[in-house]
Image 1 (cartoon, helix red, strand yellow):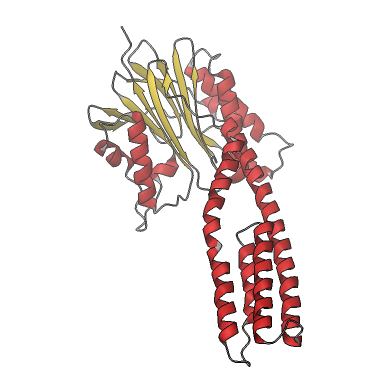
Image 2 (cartoon, rainbow, N blue to C red; image 1 turned 90 degrees about the horizontal axis):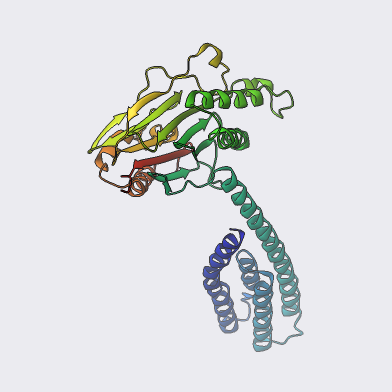
Length: 372
């Protein structure tokens, strides 16, 4: 993965070679005009722009080469107009040499910082993919497709999360949205994902799993050693929807903890999986008074369940209109999970004009026929 990031950096540098035509053309134009200009016209000082421009996109060797070419051009102008020892041209040559050296030093410093930034991004990418592992395309009788769109341009994940785990009799899937943004949200998402992966295959039923996750999240929020203010942590919570999909039964069991209801696509029709008794979001420590019961919904061969976060349905266009997810899903209901998620992603980004105000995640799950 790190090699891939470095390869991307090398590929991004290839177009920079075409930019060399700009300082070289500048040197040629200034040299020709300066040689042909009247004696009282001196364009030599403009040559300093060539190494300065080169330092903004090229490395120190290239910058030094352009600077040397500019110095040579200045020497040619001096020899053609007067002589190399002429006072005016001598000062121009000295100034050009000093400025070229300064530009070369700047290019070396910029390239070093760029290399360090690339390495940091590679490490961050690796860490992010460890936290939010890609979902497999097939889990038992299920076919799955997912997409994550981070609001931060330099991040791949934020406060949204999803994960899947196999159990003895089926598959469990969670999707959630941590309140807030930034590193705190990523940390809370990592905590919940770790607790889910560790307990999903051990808890006997879905309600016990949700209770365990609530305890894990609440214990972290109550930690007195937390590095943020108590008032901020007291307001933290995570909405989540958890599904238990048996391999042998055409049903899915759902517990919704304050999360947007999943959508069910069946035969070209779209309906919301609304539970009658939604649970509070995780982290509000209210489960002691709440009777957690998973509700069952029919989930047959060919059905697609779409889980999503509120960053999808709350995405606004230029006119302030929310993204009509159910309507767009209905228009693409005949697609496979991969095609459905890809189309929705493209349509969502078109709706918001290419920039999301919040993280957004979608997971499409299709039940496939069991092989005979």
